[in-house]
Length: 528
Image (cartoon, rainbow, N blue to C red; front, side, top):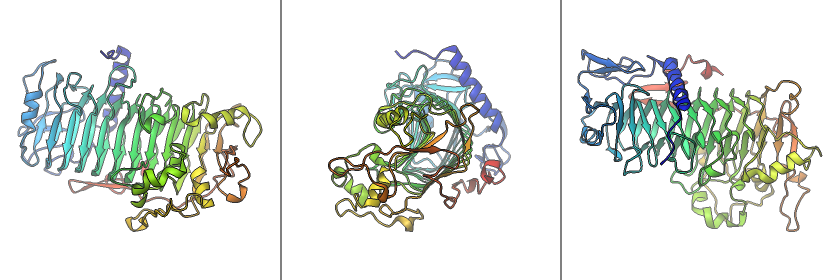
């Protein structure tokens, strides 16, 4: 049996969750039917009680097991309440900690609001569940989940698929105790959905990603805390996403932006990551698959995704690197196998290379003190043993760009993967050319937050040159070898370029616009 969380961790969770509530109380969007913030029900409905976040529960709500006491099994009552729902239903869970022994699956709900009494006041314990996901919402639109906690899901906490309009707020997913491989995979998990709004949530203990959005469009992830997961916050194969005002702490990797091969949505882009805090992300990586390869101690990682802007973040005290930017060739370096293994996904527009990544105005401090992870082991050895362009052992780069994908693309080695050519994705509004010569990976105007005497130990590293004319290191077969170029981060040489700013993302949820062009128009982060 998994060790239960210690009292100190309970207090930490409670304090962090309370901080989220205080930060956002009373201004969490329009979940009501009468156009007023935080009020559910028709005009004139009496308010029965308000949640700790200020959401008003009205008398027309469906109350699940209202007389239940701590420890009761409410599985049957919950399943019945969520079966054959009318449009715009408000379903309210009781206050306390309750047992649920099956996956709760909701199909094609329209306008549903599922609410507890607060992120710490309503807790559903799935530790004895026979299902995999705790909650799974399939299809539907305008769905809100709020003011509750999902604990110990066997696989995923709250998963949505093919939902147009999903709002998850003041909600926690928790696996108690230490971060272990047998914890559940994803905490908050919208997939193949549109108009995704995730705010004021808390994710703890996921063996994959605490807060994840995959193969989706029109996404706002703001004001959340992700702690002690393998990946804190992850955006994967998704388009038009804004990730801002979040805290990623104590994970293996803080904030990840991935494009992975073989998925229905072949690639993402136009992802902005700004005004977040990513610190102390040094947990041992217990994950599987590609996320299991993320080096522990990574503040942010961009993998094979084009059109990404990372700016005005505080990225500190991560033991491997603040930001790593790399092609998929870091994961699979067998170029000769790409046509056979990834031919179909390449034809749909995916590329192992990445382009148009702009890293600027971030405060970066005290990173690289203990770099590790099998994925970067040779690179770490080279930088820390003096086998780099400086000829001396260096603090591992705070900003690391792999460069091998760009080099191979620019030398023509990748070609079109034996005749496979991806479509021109510009028609989709994504600035993306998988085989063009100019990758534009830019890092400038970042702020060195180190104090003396460590001020000089904030570096930019480039593992391969991007100009084929500089290619002087090859093995006996003519394959390029790492150069391990290194420079100071401030006024660096290798990645010193500027790119156009990306467009803000927006979410249309129940006919209200959320994000930097909507309800956050006056938010300071949106003016950066």
